[in-house]
Length: 487
Image (cartoon, rainbow, N blue to C red; front, side):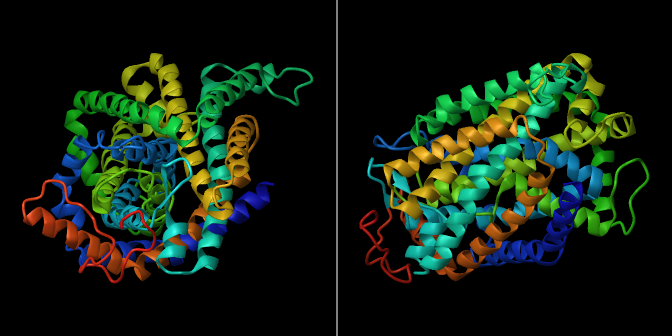
């Protein structure tokens, strides 16, 4: 299994370095140009939209709830373990490339969410469904491509991401509870009491929310996602303030190592190629821009204009990478070699070691709990993505929705007790395939996103505080929007 895991890692790195990285950045740059820098020009509007996005759901899912679902998925273990992995393997320069992916990815995220809104459909319960599979089928009229994307997303989110997130948090929490293998229980296949407790906790908490459906996930993530992100940011802010003198040194280190031909001294990996590969790969895993997962949540929102949700989802990328991931990187870099080269330092422990080095050993258990909440939020958000794509593949059959709920809970529980080295490396390949397929659709349909943005801006220029979208007879669109959602 170790050989298979290593082989999959080699394949994932090759795809990232030679294909995904370039297509992702090129697409983001293209969409930035055709929108004249939407992520910069409308940054203030993004904040304003989030501020007023809790109302207007009309019994459905509010714009803020849809934003919170995708934020819950984005702000997960990728912000803790992913950043640590990027630093250990790519050096400080990897953070620079994470920033690049995020900044151009904000334009990509805008288009994903806007297209998901334009081509969404109404579900049997009155809520909305949409995402890449829907805009591929209804916008591109390519049902084969839509079916492939929906199937890959179904497997990746329903099995891989849920189990990976659960596996990551279980290792951290078990270690904090002192559940080493020497305390394995007889008759339980080498599992410890701590592992069984964590698995049971994952099962109960996931089942309680997931079996309530997408609306239940929306209600939970609406308050949990912002609170957990804020707690983490405050914790990191305290560390940065206590070490304010090192702040500029860290910034210089990130920029100087981003283009360094060889790793810099000091215990971290690096070199230009390693920085680019790991920064891009971990940046994508964290902020999901271009991956095609977040649009599944964006489409569920009830809004008066698709661009409103596009702007909000774009801000989610900014929050995830530019704020939360950067905060993690600064904590690790400020801690220095004492944390990087400590015994047991690896992607799953480095951030906790860095924080405990700054604030004391008492932070280990609170950090384990925080990481648990981060991973848990991603697990229930991944269920939403799975359910939307199963809905597309089966036409909204009730049995299919319940199957997704059972599988999501089961894979999350299993992930808490299984060794998933192969799955950890396979997830990068699966996400690369999803991303490339989705980016093709975004480029194919870019005129729809540009047209919707021009319509929104024209109405705002005319003094309308809340633009209203018309899907038929709209002069800014290439054609009429199919269906009756935007009639």
